Structures are given as structure tokens and as C-alpha cells.
View 1 (cartoon, each protein chain N blue to C red):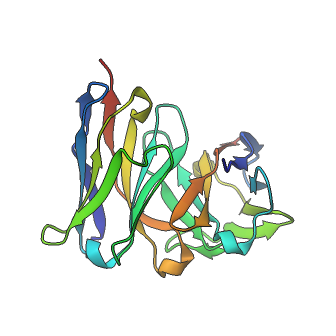
View 2: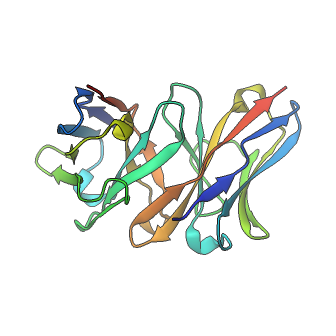
View 3: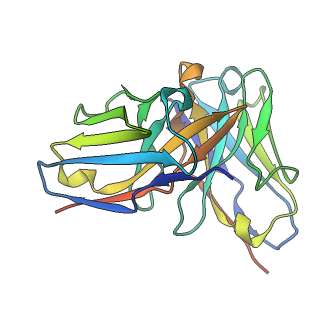
Length: 110
Length: 120
């Protein structure tokens, strides 16, 4: 069974930079998995940040960027702000209509 | 405004059935890929099912054979028929539109969710 791994939590100072990663329990993440990223605050629906590795969704601030770093997908927040404090999920397209979400990373800004 | 609104959740006994609905506004369900994603209490997101614009449907292994995704073009509504429900199906169920272009393979419009509780 495919497991998509993410760090459980990160802490970042206001104005700082943090990079979250999204990996596979076996194998490497590449652009062929079309990694996407979603932000979720407690009690709210997810918000789409990034699609297809590095395409920002409409209205998403430029401080959010996506990439492939080594064998993982990555989401970088540059110049973190207080309202970036959220849960962040990646999702990978496994082919044949199947998606798998990552385990989620809680980001604290303090 | 482009949006989706889920309904149909509730409390259901194990082994029971429930049908969730997702009404779309300002876009056409039948010409978009549409997904269901769920989130168990205190847990992460789990993709459940996809119906492509062409009609092909796909399911997570955890629900295959028990859940059926469908759509009613005349009502511009997506459905999720859930049978043989188990306690582990307890979750908030989100409807999510597949993003454009479709070959970017992501979800771009999310509803607020509807809560399903499976308990005796």
C-alpha cells in the first residue's frame, strides 16, 4: 500500500522560510505524480495552493512555491506570516484515476 | 460564484446506507472531473472517489465495492452512494472539483463538507 509521507510538524518564525516535503514510502516523487498542495485550518475546508508541482492557484500569495527537491515534492513558504499557521497536505496522482494524500504537516508560526 | 455544496450526511447504523449529494453552481458537473474526499475526526484527508467527465469512475481500496459515485446532469449534482457502512467510514465528506487543465490532476473547488457518523 502506497504511503505518502510528510513531516508531522514544523515551526517557523514570522518572516522566516520553511520547506515542507512530500515523499513516497517506496520510490521517488517526480513531476509525473503531479504533486499538489492544500492548506487547511481547523474546521475549514481545504484550500488549493499548488498544482502540478509548481503552479500557484489563483489568489495564492507568491510566498508559496512548489518544487521537486531530490526525491520529494516540496512546498516552500518564504516570509511566513501568522495566518500561514495551518495544516498542509500534499496529494499525488498515482495514475489510473487514483490519488493519495499525504499525512499532513502542521505549521506553527511563532 | 463557482461553488459546490454537500448534503445528505447524518447518523447511520453500521451496515446501513446513505447517499451524499453535491450541488454545483456556476459550472457544469458533467464536463468536469469530480471527486469525493473524506476526513475522519482528527485525521488527515483521504481521497475516496473520482468520476471523470467522460464517465469513468475510480475508488480508493477502502471503499471499493461499497461506494458508488454518480452524477445527475439534469440536476447538475454529484452523488456518493455509500452502502455497508462501517464505523471507520465516519468522517466529513468533501466534494471537490477536478482542476483545470484536467491533466494537472488536482482539485480546485472544495465544498464545506457534510458529516457522516456511523454508530449504533
